[in-house]
Length: 190
Image (cartoon, rainbow, N blue to C red; front, side):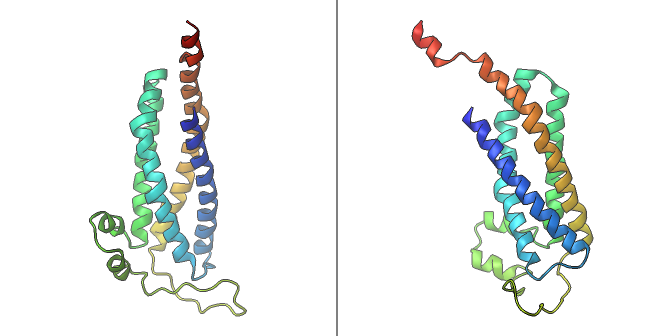
């Protein structure tokens, strides 16, 4: 069942990302965010695009159909699919609030990365070294703050609940598969 362990490891890593995202959102909410916050939010977007969405696709293609076959609880499984849809919507709002909604599409269509970065509204935003003796000058963040906070907190809430369901109920369903499947030792002895 090593594939299930891999999903557990990704869930644990996502919890660390959610903690960092929550801190960043609180800083933005209280107007105490530093100039590096933009780059930290872009890291979150990268995690969404390169880790979370492929993880969801893998679950939707492989794990959820198998779990539905094993448990027969269609309402529970459809609830997991619905949670994915709600999270996709929250991801889209989060990414759009940064003004980078077309970035992933441009990368997929084959544009040169340098041109994509040059088109980004953050191409002229400098990243400040940390721990300077004097605080940097405060500038307004080039983001849609209201949408960012709304979608960001929604991601945190929904993703935590979703992971909890998968780590408890879905894992229990999938572990039944291991108990039901005869081991190879049994077949070797007969």
